[in-house]
Length: 120
Length: 114
Image (tube, rainbow over all chains, first blue to last red; front, side, top):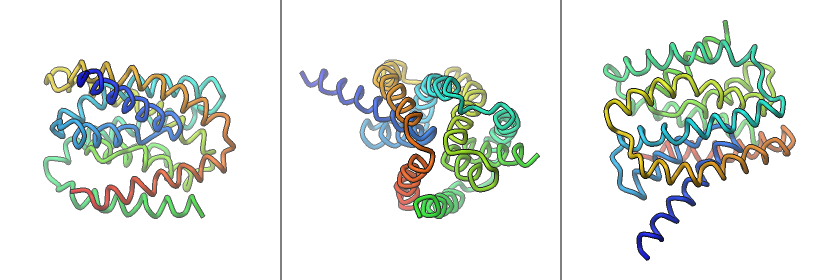
């Protein structure tokens, strides 16, 4: 019974992750990593790895639905995707040299500013 | 060129494990003329190639908890279908505002997280 309950909790958690990712086109990863660390007790590293394995197929599904609805613009996507690959490699390398705590604070402040601008 | 630069910045941030999409979407909205839906679609699709590379490394390092991932994915597919079709049926300005609230929660959470 306890196991069924636990599995049901994980299924619901998955649905919430998919819903955020589909509705907002982002954020599923943060929800996934945080819930695996705080609710399921995974290490940060394992949570990251598992989150990507879940978010990747979900992003493929959602991207396809957005594409079918005519929301995907390849002239925008191609340069952004190219930049992201370059940036991801640079970011992984930079991680060895900089503290992510400061960056995290700057990031948090930026998205709060962006959020307020979008709400009002 | 601006778009490549925006991609690089987002890539660095997500490569450091902080969260790329929550930055990419507002930056695209503020700096280019794209709609809320297109900004979201761009993030979803642009995530795919770098995620494939990251996943390959994580699988090689045996970090992925496969059983947990399968369960999350089962619920996740239902959520992704529901969320994506819901987003499509909502007007851009309404979706933008809902996105703003979601972003605000994320920002406050990140600010106080250890």
